[in-house]
Amino acid sequence: MGCLTIGEQRFAFHGPYSVIHNHTSAVTGTDWSFEWTNLEYRLSGNLSFPSRECVAALRYRQPSGQVLSCLNSMVANGWLLLVQRGGRGAGIEMEVHVSGTAALEFLTADLDHGIRVLA
Image 1 (cartoon, helix red, strand yellow):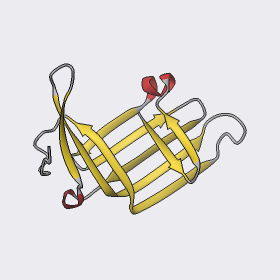
Image 2 (tube, rainbow, N blue to C red):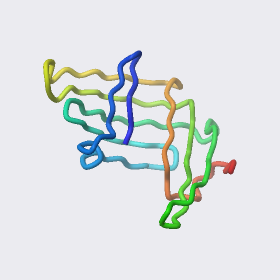
Image 3 (cartoon, rainbow, N blue to C red):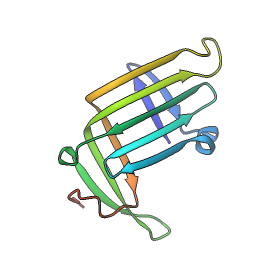
Image 4 (cartoon, helix red, strand yellow):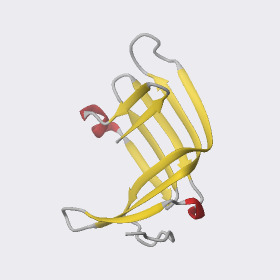
């Protein structure tokens, strides 16, 4: 689940439709690919950060007892592609390349990711 904010406009991908249709994968501990969709837009992309630029690695125990690491960086690089799938303007695309200007945070079951755990 997630959200893209461009200026004052928010594109939310966390409603019931999105929860069923979103796909994400952590290629490595610091490289993340995804495709999210809602009724009007599809957002796909790849974001990564060098492990030395990681701001924090925190551990969280899930209700099931599984422990996950939350990796967070404010210096992500990659690309995003936003496509309008419905409504007025269907088919409009916007591609954005980011270099050190995006924040990235995700949970991973990989506890041996090589990033210093702060808590």
